[in-house]
Each structure stands twice: as structure tokens, then as C-alpha cells.
Image (cartoon, rainbow, N blue to C red; front, side, top):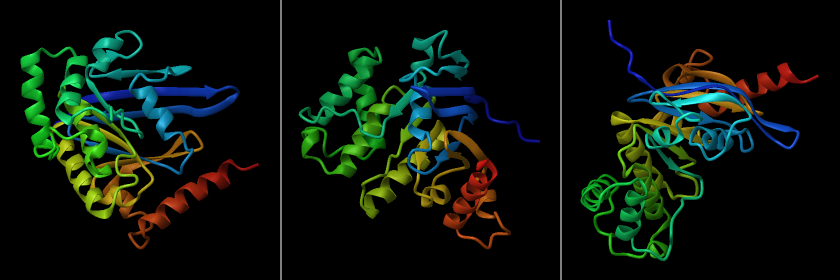
Length: 252
């Protein structure tokens, strides 16, 4: 009997409002070590807002979050030290050289100079950045800029990696490379990524949660999602049916 991998992220009953509008409503999810979780949904479903709460960028109006056993509200510094975050718009300083920027990111995580130098070599190798270390970030292709964004998210070797739409705007070759990198990261860490690209479910994700109008409406392994409807439906058809059925259930 196999032992379940430890839980690295746990969120319970998250609520977030903007004004009187509820953007995230009663969302609970769990992430385990060695797992890649895909958070799917149409644009505006609440995915980015959920990830911003999970990483401490936004405070929830209700609910709780634990990262590696540390309550994000009670021990924010210790919880955030366990997280690497790539927002939808990568937080890059476009006029900095790649090496200088990544060392800067490492120092923000309170690494010593020696630790930062060692971490720089590690993430450049892992993210395929060995040849661009002395290049200015703003001169790189979007695919390489996305690699730099992922590198800053993992330079402190976090347990949990959170990626918001990591392949949007990339060409097919770049998408393939970034997906391979995410899959590799999932072998040693826990990864949660938001996406509306259903192809990423099949190639990257172990498990899927679907958001619709601020709520989680479906959760299962990616393999079982692909067998939805006796395996006769394409993923796009599965997604449309699940979200469509939920819309019918909640309509007046």
C-alpha cells in the first residue's frame, strides 16, 4: 500500500470580493509534493485571484491557507519562503542582465552572496539560461523572458511553485519547452498552474480543478478527466459540458 505524499498547500473556504462582487467564493483545494495541479477556467473565472491569495499577494476576506504547515496569515514570512510565484505578467526588470536580476531575486530571499551564486548556476542550468546570463532581459524573446520569470520563482528552491498562465503568448516551440520544464519541476516540487489551454492538462498536469464563476465545480485526475463520457469526448468538449452543466444548474 503506497503512502500518500505530504500536503504542501492547503486552502479552505476562500472568499474574495471586489466591492460587492464576489470573485472567489468558498474555494478549497489541496496540493501534494510531486504533483502538478492545473487550475482551469474561462477568463474571468477567478483563477488569478485565487493564485494571488495562495501566494499572499491578496488577503482573502474569509478562509485560511497553509503552506508547508505554516499559516499564511499567522506566519507570513515562513509560509512565503516556501513559495515561488510567477504571475501572469512576469516581474522582470527589463533593463537588467539576466544574471544580475536572478542574483537580486535570490538576495530578496535572504540568501548569502555565496548561496545566491550557487543558486544562480543551478537555475540557469534547469531553465536553459546558460547562454543568456549576460544579456539584457528586454532583448530576449518572450519565451526566454518566461524562462527568466520561472527561474526567479524557483531560485530559492521552494516547495510550492505557483505559475499563472505560464505559456500564454508563446509560440508552439516555446510552449513545448516551458511545458517540459514545468513537468520536470513537478517531479521534485509541488506545482499549481492556472491555464485555459486544455492541451496542458494532458501534457503537464496530474490533477485538474475547474473554476467557473468563482467556484470550483470539478476536480479529478487528468487521466480520469480525459475518460469523461467513456473517453469518447475531446477535452474541449469535456470542459464545455462540465461548465455548461454547471451554468444550467445555477441559472434561475
